[in-house]
Every structure is written in C-alpha cells, then in structure tokens.
Image 1: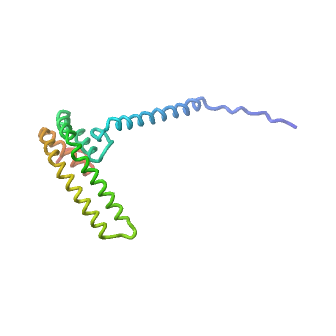
Image 2: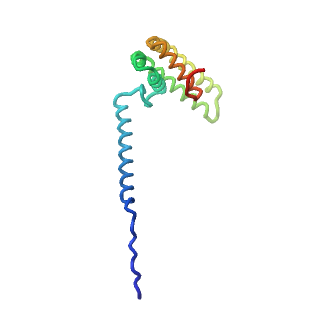
Image 3: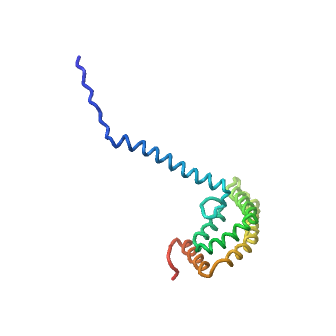
Length: 167
C-alpha cells in the first residue's frame, strides 16, 4: 500500500489580509451609518439639512442647501419656528392618503368610500397648505432677491432633471 504524499496548499498571502480587512471595514461602515441615524433620531431631526424626516422637512432642507448661508439661516429660522404648527396637519394628510390607498386597492372596490377618502385627502391637503402658506411667505421674505432667484432656478431644473443655468 503506497501512501500519497500530501501536497501542501499554499494560499496567497493577500488572502489572509483581504477578508479580515473587508469584515472590519464593513463593521465600521455599519457603525458609522447606524450612529448617524441614531444621532438624528436623538436630536429629533425633522429633516432640515438631512434626508431624515418628513417629506416636507426634506424639501425645506433641500431649500436651505440651495440658498446662500445667510439666507438659509434666516429662512430656516422662520420655517423651524412654525414647524410644530403644521406638523399635525402633515400627519392628518398622511393618514388621509393611507385611507385613500386602502380604498383604491380594496376588494371589492367601493366607489363611494373611495370618493369620500379622496375628498378627505383633498381637504387635509388644503388645510395643510392654508396653515403652511403664511410661514412660507414669511420665510421667503427673509431671503435676498438673489437667493429667491437661485431657489427657483434650482427647483425648476431639478423638476426637469437637468442641472444648469436658466436660458
């Protein structure tokens, strides 16, 4: 009986480094992202200056990012001051929209219930807009003419999906 000699398998030296480094890097990135999310929640971040929060907060944060620093500070101060006034309206709109969504996918479909849910959604939207309009106008009044032009230019191009200067 002959025994076959074992051939030692040599691993490339870089393999001993790459896998542990990759695991460590992934754990580090998970910790950084998790810490950022937890910190935003702990601050009660409403979305100003970040992607966290309500859609309205994200829109206002985007507006602040577009504006020059002095205009952004003045605009943001007004908007944050009254945020609690229309936060409840935003929640009511979200609930009305959820009910509309439920009615749209209901089986069997109930046209009258869907019509009622659509009407409630429209009423909630109008109420939010009525409450928010005064604050928005006051906030915009704190912004320089150049800042307001930049805000409009950037939002128009963002809506079209093309960055650049107006024609």
